[in-house]
Length: 250
Image (tube, rainbow, N blue to C red; front, side, top):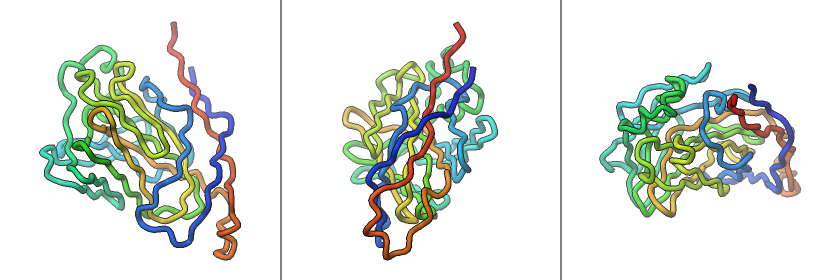
């Protein structure tokens, strides 16, 4: 059984702006919608890794899935902070506070969860969330203007179904934390129009939950235009990747 990368999807009608500000939201196209968590082959490996993070409590550890290591990011679990910097990135919540929890009760030892690799279990066994009302903003720095980036994130609560609701990211992708018993992940792509850009996450029916994410550089969309051509630029090159789901043996 293999996961194949095939097909094309378009990122339409993006315009470059030479004067974009620090909180410019990505214009992201999500590929294939929300996907139920299955196994290590869920993890996208195209392009070149930029950053990968396991988001959790201050006790969180790095998670290695295949050859990819998700570095640990600890978020205080007492609603004491609105912003957590890590590397050149930042998680921020407004108007409420960030928190985290370890998902370590009965559901973690369920036979379905136990079938995942140790690294995948580590990635999913805790996560960060936000008080309501509010929105989690992930700000990413040091992007290359004109490059295509793949962004993948996970929302999983295998402990008590219903503890967390649906989490919706910029671009309209909604992940359900207990879907299929293990939660879901999403994969999308955007073109950097600034060196610093942001993705937002929110929930309308409970607490938004993020367990981890990765950012990968897929290379330039086109040669970066001269400033005089920005206003005339109306579209970008097509990006070719569509996940085909792995089928379990009968």
